Length: 334
Image (cartoon, rainbow, N blue to C red; front, side, top):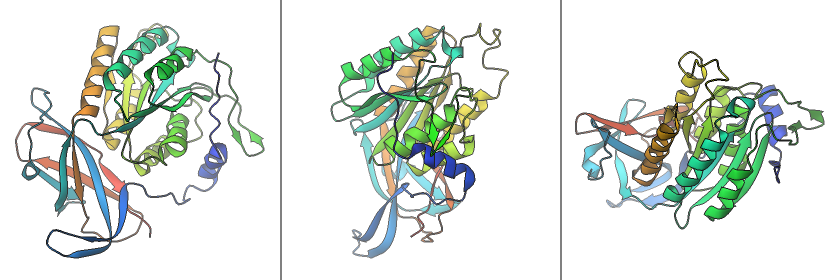
């Protein structure tokens, strides 16, 4: 039985406002505001925003490259080359992340497997200084553990996850929102706005789900935008009860495409598995990428504070490489 309902302050009011006023401005957190900074050449930058990128690079054999130098990278924003101002290789940078577990009826047969694999994942990825929380989602969204660096507390929270366990339905002001299905997109929106938005540094969501959404008030595009505005990287491990779907698996439904969009646009990965061994491999791959990244920073040549989305493209001088990093950010409005 769940001990905590995810009581996110003003969450449901935000959800209702999102529907009634889609143009509502959001806080831009894709970059750090630096009102004045002196460069090594002595030039003073006023009102310029530093954009930080976390990138993992793999070669053609899918091995992570750890020996790249600053000169190996090129960054383009909306097609314009940018100057890399800061560069570092990081393996122990503190990580703030949430584990989101799909507990809808379609996950009944695979939930125990997910729980065991998630426990082992925490053993590999959680380091001193990291913080994590655990949330389940189905017809509602429940916080099973708030931020903690203690693995034992997180494991106990994961073990408390139950299929469609009783929880309090979301409320939008005085108007009740009755349970409608699997609130996949709402869960992303809620955890980004209420748990990750106020955190600094590297932030991620690791989501175990069959990627089917039924009944979310927040649409896919808004869930994605919210993750981008809070600098959250989304990793999705797609796992399904094949019997529930008539053994069709993932190949024939739209959820896989939506999951890949959420992951790729935020710099994460979507991996779809069909057995316990593949699930373990997926967790290993994601944990390796979370712990082996380059940190790149640049001051954009476009100084406009227009709030628009800026596309980012990272290129590597070496051939046959693939970069995993977010695809863009939202410019500040002031």
